[in-house]
Length: 255
Image (cartoon, rainbow, N blue to C red):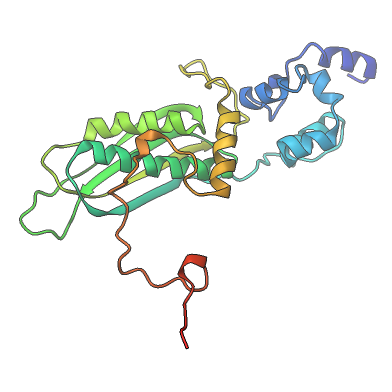
């Protein structure tokens, strides 16, 4: 195709999701700005695309205009996994307390996932008792749940709870738990025929609000499932003084 008029006419008949590098999720975000077809994308302001969607989408726009930006087989690097795990401040016997701990860990992993601009297709949860406690039953287990590509904390917590309910064993004093997100994508791939759950309406907008508030003040917005008292948090009685990093812990010298 060398006829520019014909090329633009054809672009107007193609959805943005058909453009290489733009999958369903980014296509949905583009449509919110009235960019529905490949023709709309072609005619968009490249500065707006870079500011709103990042450098990779800008490069896709430039490729569409005939400017080589991608080398053969080039793709942006994606973190392979995110792991959040902690030892508890006290042993946890109740599944409700484990729910809170795993929900909290999952939410922290989801924040990092969005910070990376990634989506995940798999979550793993593990729980274990202490390896050193005398006279206690020892137990450890993990479970894996496949996902439709997501970066929504709610989706991830739902999946984590499904796993936890499956691997939890009563009568154990649990000392540690963790969450791992894997099978990462950059959000440009299209949903497959086997993806059963589409993205929640308004998901990205809500997650942006949560991340913005929590960046300004840690814990400003959180899911109720993460708990209020959070008994699982590590004890900090022996924490070293933070004279140089916390205003409320400044050393006071009296003459």
